[in-house]
Length: 297
Image 1 (tube, helix red, strand yellow):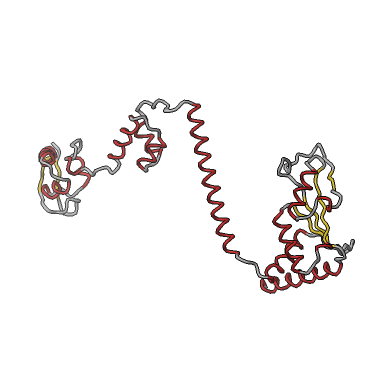
Image 2 (spheres, helix red, strand yellow):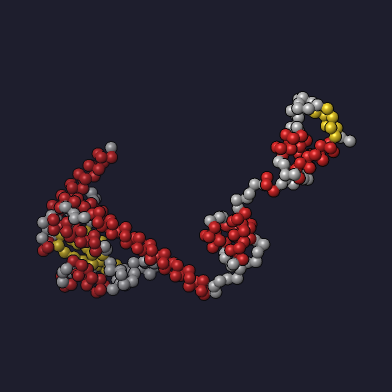
């Protein structure tokens, strides 16, 4: 026989004193448990306020169903298994239920792997179709962004064009060096839009068309004649009015990316008798740079 003595200060709460056998208390505790009482109810009924003793009294006796907390994932687990048996992949189940693939793997790993829904060729075709849709969506988004940006610019004022042209030339035009003074306005670019802005700027400055000269610069391995016609059309001059094309020697060791039918080289735009204009450009740019520096100070 095992005696459990309840005395004040022994962890039982001092509710009762005396001697009781462990076996008799266990019989009472088990009986109450089977009646559906909770641990709290049993503790209060038997005045057992020591958790270790209460655990020993109820050892091996399962709690009643009503005391069990429902598992929030039980329904998800059952649904995941149902979807797996229908042949869904982990990705499809995740998309359907919104739970992690690691959880899905634990729930359904004992189930047979579903047969592939598509052949390798069909799967590749579906992937390619999805890629085409993605690229089209990206292209549409880029076009929408570009259209919105174009609307933000609106009509350029003369002053705006004046300032844009200064920055454009200083970025892409020929600049004189202290060790080699070349005071002549020469602009080189492969972008037709840049060329058009530069020509509009020259017109704003009052530069007569007769003072402007054009020359194509391109690799000798490209379509030289086609490039000459292209640039002549862009600046609206007769092909015969172009100066002699500058051909760049082809280096067979160099892997060039500017090839193909869209490669048309660069257009060189020169202005005759432009030493004074070049000095003015230097002054304009210097003023803009100082203004920007002062604003950032």
